[in-house]
Image (cartoon, rainbow, N blue to C red; front, side, top):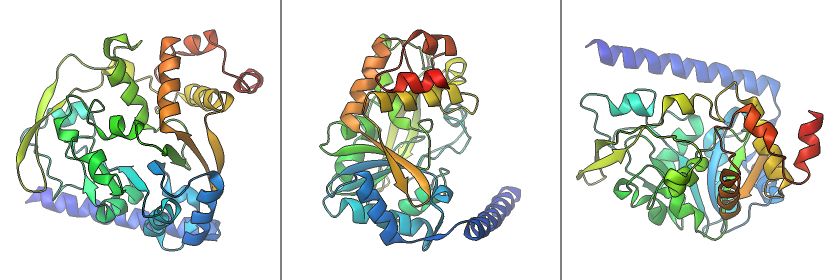
Length: 316
């Protein structure tokens, strides 16, 4: 009895918080339209037929007329009917991968479980044509390659490995990792290289134990999906942690200096994209030099940045 009431209270509080934030953004920002966002995406270099893995901060775009649905519509307009959109719609009911793995009685069900990744992923989930079956890192997709990218995730031997949305995404022509109002920190794509390199990756990023978590697919069939949590000691110094601004700055300057990141503005937000294959190849190159999204300040200082990024970092 108490748990449903707690969930209702949390939902009401979250709804009030979002309405308050929307009012604040509206007062502080100009109105941005779907058509304007689509034009900005085109100016950035997003083309019809592209496949985008989208990481976003909705509030950074300004006050968008139509909200999250208008942003998704602009992305669809930018890539057209031959394009594809992927959005992380992860569901972590216990807050972390490890805690979710240890939950008693947890069974992921895409027919009933949403996402705790924010407003835009929530909205996209309702519009997406396909969602991968995975107990912690479910990804949703719309467009030409949506089925192919999501259909085998529950069969993959690891979260980001062979058959996962990330591994399949790398090989698609016109695939781009897109950041809207976010830094180089909250980008899940990094982990595909960790899985690909395995023991050759410079850091031991996974715990020894692999859990097998039950999931249901859309038809109600049950699957046991392998999940190996991140090692806490290593994950605690990862690029997306607040205290690792040095690492986020290094990766931004590195990919700029290597000529791989394209920067611009969409709405009121700074935006960027990196072609997926080039992103993947350069991450492997960095790993060969001992640089990863877990590198210490001393490791970063020991390796000069590529190209034009070096002077910028030196002056900082």
